[in-house]
Amino acid sequence: MDLQSYLLLSATTFIIGVVGVISRRNAIIVFMSIELMLNSVNLTLVAFSAFMGDVTGQMIVFFSMTVAAAEAAVGLAIIISMFRNKQTVNLDDLNILKW
Amino acid sequence: MTIETFLFYFLGAISVGSALMMVTRRSPVIAALYLILNFFALGGLYLSLHAQFIAFIQILVYAGAIMVLFLFVIMLLNLGDEKKLQEKISYKKIIGAGLSFGVLMELIYVLGFSRATMPPSQFEKATEIGTVENIGMQLFTKFLFPFEVTSILLLAAIVGAVILAKKKLR
Image (cartoon, rainbow over all chains, first blue to last red):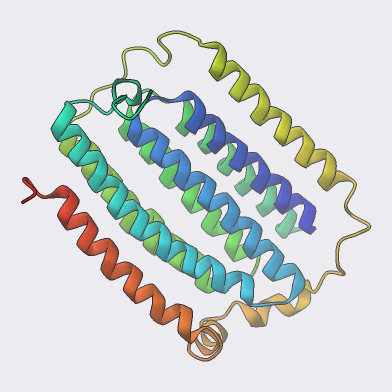
């Protein structure tokens, strides 16, 4: 397999994640779509790392996984406190910051 | 068809299919389970790229820790299915989906014509660079400073999560 195939696969999953963020209104599913986008970018980095014989791409994936773990912890805490205040996770019902 | 090509198409089909299912399911629990399937397929793809350590971490951290956290929160909030996938199809969402599809077409177009400009493949070297030994060596020499900064990030995340999820702020 060549590099382009992996990049195409990664682009496809990234766009699926983007469509999920745009079209879904459930906060948790939007959050999971963001994780999907993070993972597709990780696939790009690992593919470049393997095909260019350089370890840096895999190190960036390692750090991005750490950031994703921290992001998941904080994001889910935000969703819990949001649910506690408004009794909903529908993003259309959360509009106090909208003008 | 070599085993590598077969693995790529097999795991790639699982990955794209489970991603599509994840975005279109009504129930958050089923969506989370499809996302776990997607993470396993990605782990297999990392293995076929000879990135053993990253594949292992993918299964352990993503499919294990992070998704358990997601499922835990979904079940804690006791969310039911959404009534309908879409209450009303607004023009904003159609434009958004259309633009994302346009970006995908653009990426496919660019990647399809980029074969000549790609650097020469070093794939035979890939078996050596993805091992735990090599990753650990690089992590504690060249990438030592980012590694230490990561610990501060995790500390901040722990404190932030506890404060955000606390009953009452004072």
